[in-house]
Amino acid sequence: MLKKNWKNLFRKTILDRGYGYYLEGAVEDISREDDVISATVSGTDLYEVEIFLDHDEVYDMDCDCPYAEDGNYCKHMAAVLYELEDTDTTEKSPVKESIADIINAADEATLRSFLVDILENDEKLKQRFLLLTDKPKASLEHYKKLIDSTIYEHQDKWGFIDYEEATDFYEDMEAFNDDIRIMMDNGQYRDAFQLSLYICQEVADIDSDDDGEMTMIMDDYSSFWAEIAEKMTPQDKDWLFEKALLEYELNDNVFLDEYLETLITRQFREERFRGRVIDFIDIAIQTSEPDSYQRSDALRRMADYLNDTETPFEEIETFCREHWDDFKMREWLARQFIQQGEWQKAIVIYEDLIESDLGYPGSVTDYREELLRLYRKTGNQYTEEDWIQEREKVFPCFNNYGQAQLLCEEKLYDRLWELLKNTDLHTVLGYEDVLLPKYAAEILQKYSDYLNHAAVQASGRKAYQEWARLLKRMRKIEGGKELSKQIVSDWRTRYKNRSAMMDELKEL
Image (cartoon, rainbow, N blue to C red; front, side):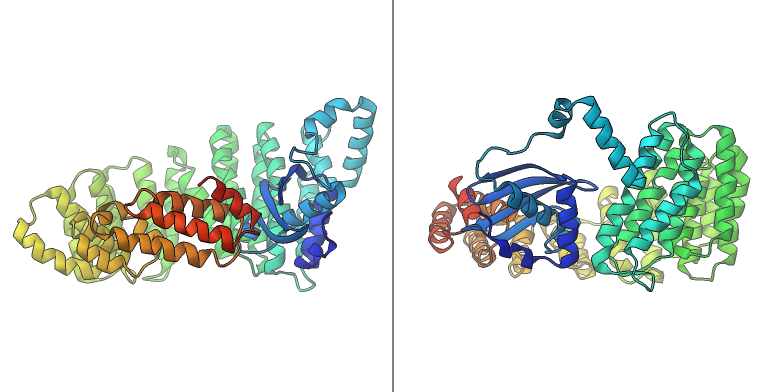
């Protein structure tokens, strides 16, 4: 029987939401094997949850949802524990029927009665169900009220959404995805655009402390726009173009501006739009402050649009050189030359960028790295003796990661080990094959240090599986089999109460 003190592991809001998931029947495929509980919880996605017990007391939990990945105990874990408490799972086989089996076994009257009750008490589900029928659909205004209500539900009295609330807000807002998809399947492209735009407008204006959830919502809903534009009739696409331009003109949120700019400059390449799109981008260039991100971004959009609409390359090159003071234009043109195989022309531009040092902090290092690749492609820049001297000038231009790559390419393995010997194990593993012939003992010691340090703290099954893989990998190294056995033997004594860890070690 599960001990009751597990609820103390959760914040009240998380516990309440987990209880709601449990009541909704979101916990599926729950099973127990020894002291490990496994289950699937359906939210905006399907999440895999594992609960680790020690004498019926929770000592660790794992879930692959974003909130839990940051080390938090999430509502999906709470839902599983409520379900476990209710069912008192003791068998190794799953204890619940699938939803499909339950529905197939129910009679029609029961299903109809249940559906009526659900739809009468959940306005969002009701409107989604109506979209699947030939009944009159909800108006956009009605959907906007549902969206406003969802936002209000997660805001505090000052209209702020805090960090702890942001994940739940994201999941609730994602529910409208299904409505928009059904609209598109029904050919209601104008409604789909206006609803997704409204969500982006409202979310862009929210004051929040989140971990990227607001951006994720806007990314998700603006991602519909390309498909909407592609599938619209010419008449509807003309409407979309005018609508996007108007919304851009009326909008005063810089965050939303970028999404609308992307729509206007990427989805309207037909000849009938070309002149107005070019004028749109040109206004952005002319009204931006010199040396600003906005001007640089507008110049790049113009070059991309001209290229996408099959403008003669000579005209695009002229445009780039007219704005040669912007390093992004030089980068853009260099990349085009590389795509065309005009490596020498690209080399000239990168050498010019290094000399002028116009780019962002650290850009010179990136330019030197690109030059290095180009020099090797041309094959005639340096003699072997000259290159040995030149590369010593190149090394300091790279961070440790870039230096490691270059040292490996140059087969300077002693210097590579000197660079990496004080880094973490996973960095060394990227170069293990070339370092093992000379540094096998040192690399095995890194394995041992990493594994024994990591094992001090109890973890979830995924971590134990990774450690088991590393132990197996050690065995392939000379002397590694004995060291691996020693570590496993020590763990079986030291951590014998960690059932999940012991399960993974059985494979060894």
